[in-house]
Image (cartoon, rainbow, N blue to C red; front, side, top):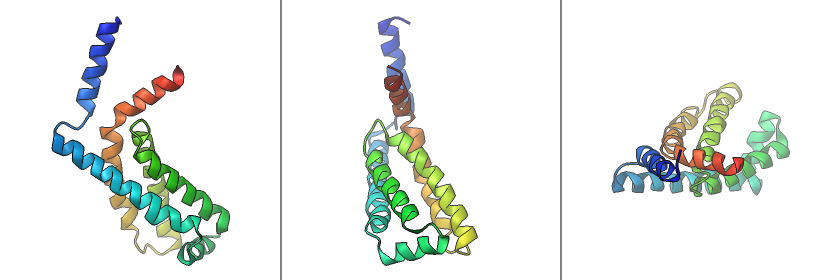
Length: 145
């Protein structure tokens, strides 16, 4: 493929995968920021500072402090990654996996209390992953050199 053809193909791909209108782009970015704050601050930080409710939950699971700190760090880093365009789709996809795990753990270890929450959060994460999928293509191209 020649350089001009590659440029046209890249522009076509970006135009096809990016949210179409200004309002859609603003809505997508707003959802990204809200989820980044949710995962980073509301969910990750309490685990990283060993808030008593987080400690209690992880002790009940039998995962203790190592599990709590690991998941807290992943949530904080993933929240930051949601704000970085090149990483946003990968971060959203990773969070979908984390939410599936959270749903299963909630059902099996906590009697299903608040089990719907991870499922509800998957919907905007899937939107981000899909809408920003061209960024994943760019990331893979960069990693391959």
